[in-house]
Image (cartoon, rainbow, N blue to C red; front, side, top):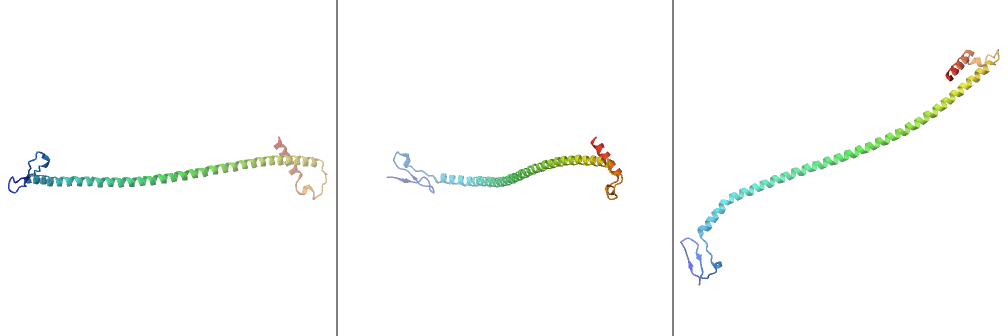
Length: 172
């Protein structure tokens, strides 16, 4: 049988048994429980303060994360804008290179036309020189009394001789 005894009035009863196994002994003192409760109550504000500090740190970290995410978004936008500008610059460069090639091609065609025109002008000058020489030779044997409508109508003899002399000096 288990005897019930009280240590002091107003305190919790101590339950003991006669068994040697200590696992069946339960001893609780009201003062000890009160002291532990008071100790926990004293620790409660300190614990709440620590919890508040941790919550404040968490809010601060959350704000840092949001700020960094915003900065990251801005950086990504800047990168996309720079990539777009780079692509546009590449496209403009390509268009300029194509324009340069087109203009060089036109320049080559123009130079070929000029070369062809130079050859044609030299040929025409040679033909004109031959024509002047032929006209000069023809005037040496001309009729001393030409008709009034003939060659004198367009040129005087001095004009023809001046043209021949100019043509001969150009060939020399």
